[in-house]
Image 1 (cartoon, rainbow, N blue to C red):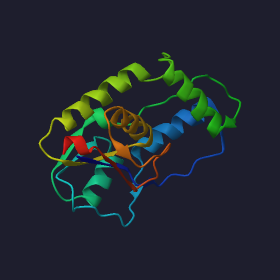
Image 2: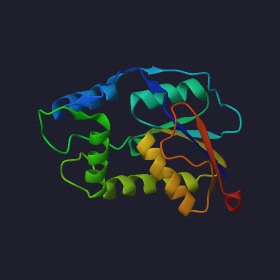
Image 3: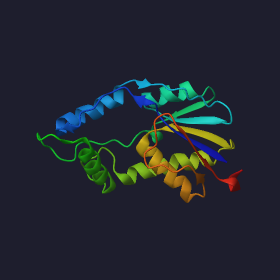
Length: 180
Protein backbone atom coordinates (compact mmCIF):
# COMPACT_ATOMS: atom_id res chain seq x y z
CA UNK A 1 0.00 0.00 0.00
CA UNK A 2 1.19 3.51 -0.82
CA UNK A 3 0.15 6.70 0.91
CA UNK A 4 1.05 9.96 -0.82
CA UNK A 5 1.30 13.02 1.41
CA UNK A 6 1.03 16.51 -0.08
CA UNK A 7 1.04 19.81 1.77
CA UNK A 8 -1.19 22.46 0.21
CA UNK A 9 0.34 24.97 -2.20
CA UNK A 10 2.12 28.02 -0.81
CA UNK A 11 -0.21 30.62 0.70
CA UNK A 12 0.02 34.07 -0.93
CA UNK A 13 0.59 36.05 2.27
CA UNK A 14 3.57 37.99 3.56
CA UNK A 15 4.33 37.96 7.27
CA UNK A 16 6.27 40.27 9.52
CA UNK A 17 9.39 39.04 11.24
CA UNK A 18 8.18 40.52 14.55
CA UNK A 19 4.59 40.51 15.82
CA UNK A 20 2.61 41.37 18.93
CA UNK A 21 0.19 38.69 20.14
CA UNK A 22 -2.66 40.56 18.44
CA UNK A 23 -0.77 40.76 15.12
CA UNK A 24 0.17 37.08 15.36
CA UNK A 25 -3.49 36.09 15.83
CA UNK A 26 -4.50 38.36 12.92
CA UNK A 27 -1.83 36.77 10.72
CA UNK A 28 -3.05 33.27 11.62
CA UNK A 29 -6.66 34.24 10.75
CA UNK A 30 -5.61 35.75 7.42
CA UNK A 31 -3.52 32.65 6.64
CA UNK A 32 -6.68 30.55 6.91
CA UNK A 33 -8.48 32.68 4.29
CA UNK A 34 -5.75 33.58 1.78
CA UNK A 35 -5.52 32.00 -1.65
CA UNK A 36 -2.69 29.68 -2.66
CA UNK A 37 -0.13 29.92 -5.45
CA UNK A 38 -0.37 26.71 -7.54
CA UNK A 39 2.74 24.98 -8.82
CA UNK A 40 3.13 22.44 -11.64
CA UNK A 41 2.50 19.32 -9.55
CA UNK A 42 -0.09 16.98 -11.12
CA UNK A 43 -0.23 13.43 -9.82
CA UNK A 44 -3.34 11.76 -11.21
CA UNK A 45 -1.60 8.48 -12.04
CA UNK A 46 -1.03 5.76 -9.46
CA UNK A 47 -3.59 7.05 -6.94
CA UNK A 48 -6.96 5.38 -6.38
CA UNK A 49 -8.46 8.06 -4.14
CA UNK A 50 -7.63 11.34 -2.44
CA UNK A 51 -8.47 12.41 1.10
CA UNK A 52 -8.30 16.14 1.65
CA UNK A 53 -8.55 18.63 4.49
CA UNK A 54 -11.72 20.71 4.43
CA UNK A 55 -9.69 23.94 4.49
CA UNK A 56 -9.91 25.85 1.22
CA UNK A 57 -6.16 25.94 0.53
CA UNK A 58 -6.03 22.15 0.69
CA UNK A 59 -9.16 21.72 -1.45
CA UNK A 60 -7.75 24.03 -4.13
CA UNK A 61 -4.50 22.06 -4.10
CA UNK A 62 -6.24 18.67 -4.27
CA UNK A 63 -8.46 19.72 -7.19
CA UNK A 64 -5.43 21.09 -9.04
CA UNK A 65 -3.16 18.07 -8.65
CA UNK A 66 -5.68 15.20 -8.67
CA UNK A 67 -8.72 14.66 -10.87
CA UNK A 68 -10.25 11.53 -9.34
CA UNK A 69 -12.38 10.93 -6.25
CA UNK A 70 -11.64 13.46 -3.50
CA UNK A 71 -13.02 12.89 -0.01
CA UNK A 72 -13.05 16.17 1.93
CA UNK A 73 -12.85 15.81 5.71
CA UNK A 74 -12.48 18.03 8.79
CA UNK A 75 -10.28 15.35 10.35
CA UNK A 76 -7.32 16.43 8.16
CA UNK A 77 -7.43 20.13 9.00
CA UNK A 78 -4.34 21.92 10.27
CA UNK A 79 -3.41 22.15 13.91
CA UNK A 80 -4.66 25.60 14.91
CA UNK A 81 -2.54 27.91 17.03
CA UNK A 82 -3.23 31.17 18.84
CA UNK A 83 -0.88 33.38 20.83
CA UNK A 84 -0.04 31.63 24.10
CA UNK A 85 0.76 34.91 25.83
CA UNK A 86 -0.80 38.36 25.49
CA UNK A 87 1.75 41.09 24.84
CA UNK A 88 2.07 44.36 22.98
CA UNK A 89 5.80 43.73 22.68
CA UNK A 90 6.67 42.61 19.13
CA UNK A 91 8.34 39.20 19.33
CA UNK A 92 9.95 37.14 16.55
CA UNK A 93 7.54 35.03 14.48
CA UNK A 94 9.60 31.92 15.28
CA UNK A 95 9.17 32.60 19.01
CA UNK A 96 5.41 32.49 18.51
CA UNK A 97 5.60 29.21 16.60
CA UNK A 98 7.80 27.63 19.26
CA UNK A 99 5.82 28.75 22.32
CA UNK A 100 2.49 27.85 20.69
CA UNK A 101 3.76 24.41 19.66
CA UNK A 102 4.84 23.77 23.26
CA UNK A 103 1.41 24.90 24.48
CA UNK A 104 -0.21 22.50 21.97
CA UNK A 105 2.03 19.64 23.11
CA UNK A 106 0.97 20.26 26.71
CA UNK A 107 -2.74 20.52 25.76
CA UNK A 108 -2.75 24.08 27.12
CA UNK A 109 -6.16 25.76 27.17
CA UNK A 110 -4.76 28.73 25.19
CA UNK A 111 -4.78 26.57 22.05
CA UNK A 112 -7.93 25.86 20.02
CA UNK A 113 -7.13 22.14 20.01
CA UNK A 114 -4.61 20.29 22.17
CA UNK A 115 -2.33 17.45 21.15
CA UNK A 116 -4.61 14.74 22.56
CA UNK A 117 -7.60 15.79 20.41
CA UNK A 118 -5.44 16.33 17.33
CA UNK A 119 -3.85 12.90 17.52
CA UNK A 120 -7.23 11.26 18.16
CA UNK A 121 -8.78 12.71 15.00
CA UNK A 122 -5.68 12.02 12.87
CA UNK A 123 -5.45 8.42 14.09
CA UNK A 124 -9.16 7.93 13.34
CA UNK A 125 -8.85 9.12 9.73
CA UNK A 126 -5.66 7.12 9.14
CA UNK A 127 -7.32 3.96 10.50
CA UNK A 128 -10.28 4.61 8.18
CA UNK A 129 -7.97 5.12 5.19
CA UNK A 130 -6.00 1.94 5.94
CA UNK A 131 -9.24 -0.08 5.96
CA UNK A 132 -10.01 0.96 2.38
CA UNK A 133 -9.69 -1.55 -0.43
CA UNK A 134 -7.86 1.06 -2.46
CA UNK A 135 -4.13 0.48 -2.26
CA UNK A 136 -2.83 3.89 -3.24
CA UNK A 137 -4.24 6.83 -1.30
CA UNK A 138 -3.29 10.47 -1.63
CA UNK A 139 -3.66 12.77 1.39
CA UNK A 140 -3.67 16.56 0.95
CA UNK A 141 -3.31 18.37 4.24
CA UNK A 142 -1.09 20.81 6.16
CA UNK A 143 2.44 20.94 7.59
CA UNK A 144 1.64 20.16 11.23
CA UNK A 145 -0.98 17.55 10.44
CA UNK A 146 1.25 15.83 7.86
CA UNK A 147 4.14 15.68 10.31
CA UNK A 148 1.91 13.84 12.80
CA UNK A 149 0.40 11.63 10.04
CA UNK A 150 3.89 10.60 8.92
CA UNK A 151 4.71 9.56 12.50
CA UNK A 152 1.45 7.58 12.74
CA UNK A 153 2.17 5.80 9.44
CA UNK A 154 5.72 5.01 10.54
CA UNK A 155 4.36 3.37 13.72
CA UNK A 156 2.05 1.31 11.49
CA UNK A 157 4.97 -0.07 9.48
CA UNK A 158 5.19 2.44 6.63
CA UNK A 159 8.54 3.55 5.26
CA UNK A 160 9.36 6.42 2.99
CA UNK A 161 10.26 10.06 2.72
CA UNK A 162 11.26 11.88 5.89
CA UNK A 163 10.43 15.48 6.62
CA UNK A 164 9.99 17.75 9.59
CA UNK A 165 8.07 20.47 7.79
CA UNK A 166 6.60 19.31 4.49
CA UNK A 167 7.28 21.65 1.59
CA UNK A 168 4.28 23.21 -0.14
CA UNK A 169 3.04 21.28 -3.17
CA UNK A 170 5.56 18.42 -2.88
CA UNK A 171 4.67 14.73 -2.91
CA UNK A 172 6.06 12.48 -0.15
CA UNK A 173 5.42 8.75 -0.53
CA UNK A 174 5.08 6.25 2.33
CA UNK A 175 4.84 2.51 1.61
CA UNK A 176 3.92 -0.62 3.52
CA UNK A 177 4.46 -3.77 1.44
CA UNK A 178 2.67 -5.98 3.97
CA UNK A 179 -0.62 -4.15 3.25
CA UNK A 180 -0.45 -4.64 -0.54
